Length: 446
Image (cartoon, rainbow, N blue to C red; front, side):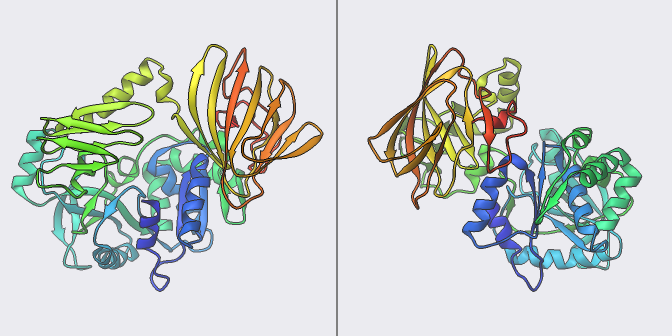
């Protein structure tokens, strides 16, 4: 979806190179996806932690405003489905006219059902910037079902798409007026952070003081300069399993599926599987999601209640709420295969040309067996080449690293044995991804 979002605005005659704002731990995945489609970002802003859209937009405006204070920012979340990119371009041109005159533009999309998971915008007076450009009469927070139905029947209400447009200087001025604490700490983080080769890393300590709030609540609901451009672009924010199901092809009974499934006498099901067959009989209007982490079964109309499960998992301090079974890293990925008393087994994949940090452990030894590809392994003062069906023992305290010098991924099975097997049992001596300075962080894993 990141690739699709970037491709919507890849017309160099209209849009400049994209500015990507993301959590720094996701950037290696995002940069790889952009490289796959041959697009290089103009800037990458890597947040040390999540602080919602107000902070993300403030950082982008600060970065762009250095050279172009009047530059127009079109803000596009990367998790949206937009079926009609041409209509988006037309709407953006209309929004650009309004933004160039000092407006903060939000884009509203037609509400076709009483949805309780979206915010709404009520249109006001029509403006001269375009035939679907209006003053914002009101922003309405996610309503209950009755209120959503009343707004749908009344007309003139649109879902808030989360797409925005404004000048860099204008949004910074409005942040100064309505949310000065956000701007103050973003400026401090921006100015005391690093900026190398188009990669901006705000200072973590200053950024941690930024309030966690959306741009809607921080500015747009307070400003007198908000306008809405209403657009029908085939939009969905894929904010629930129900909305995902609605975007997919279905059979004659209204069933949709990802993965291997058999459905007998079922209707209106969305089945999402991964590694095994899912068989259903005599069911209707359900979402079934089977992953390595958990199994979810619910009625479609309860899709928004998934957050209640997440809250309960966090309250119970469940490990599944903290870490996926398959974990992505800058060098590749690892997946837990088995856990037992003082031992665990992982399947590790090292991408071509990548290497893990040079490291050692205080509490565990490791056994590595190569199952695919050719690996270069450093073990203390020795460097060895291992091929499939060859293995090596890494004693507790030994300095080690694995490198993939080839053009295909290296797959290996790692068996860990020790008194403590947490991902923070690592001391980095050298790392090409810049993770040496904080070996106790959650990112220290391998």
